[in-house]
Length: 126
Image (cartoon, rainbow, N blue to C red):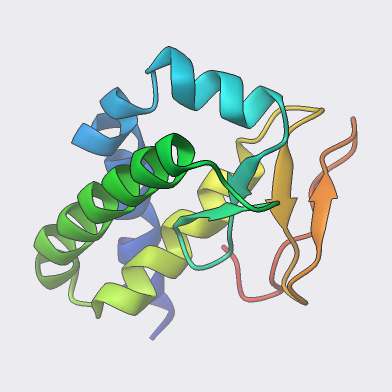
């Protein structure tokens, strides 16, 4: 079980670096929404809305999340996991990669702003 989880974690780490969604996240609108605290990372591996989004922000996040799900789906089978397990493991990494000042969702569902310390992550995170 641990070996499978470790494989999922390593594959998820690679996915974070090379997915089409990662390229889409370089979009200035994405960076601006993230910097302004309008959107943030969720433990399930997807972006979420910290506050009620504008139609443009909703469309941007929906597009990124669709691309993330496609990447998770294609990578999960080769990692020997489910899409949900793969997305969760990637979510752990994405929350860890947030920068101070950015928003993320805690395991309890609360939106918080990352400070200089480590983020609060699910205890199941690798």
